[in-house]
Length: 175
Image (tube, rainbow, N blue to C red):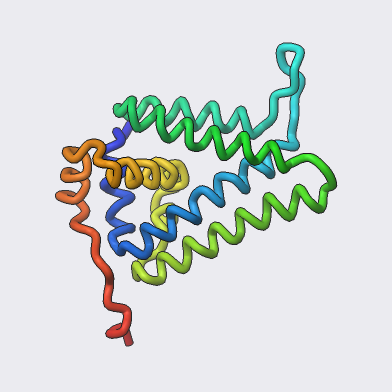
């Protein structure tokens, strides 16, 4: 079982161009929100209430984040994903058309933004080599935002030691 440092460093290897990282700040939350919308309609009776597939998937993801060896990051990314899932529930009601427009729309536009970012990177998305990258994406975005706020310079330094510094890839020279 890989810890947060290993996972973030591996993910960072695919995300060194700053434009790609910025695209993830927009695209990853859109994808998580879209998944939350789509999974919010599948509800099951539980404990006298209705439990949705979105909350079940969230609970599994949050448990995974909490077991990566970095409690502060695990709690923070779990809260961030939980907020997006909650927001997804807010728009999942109503007509099937509205539900699909919100869910599929955000999901697809989020992925489109990801692919634009990876065009700047010159590399395929990380999940193409490791499906766990789909879980690491929200953790990476959360960690990057926390690094910007001054959190855990030691972890940032270790990620950069393994993956290299961020840069702006010169795409004008690509033939």
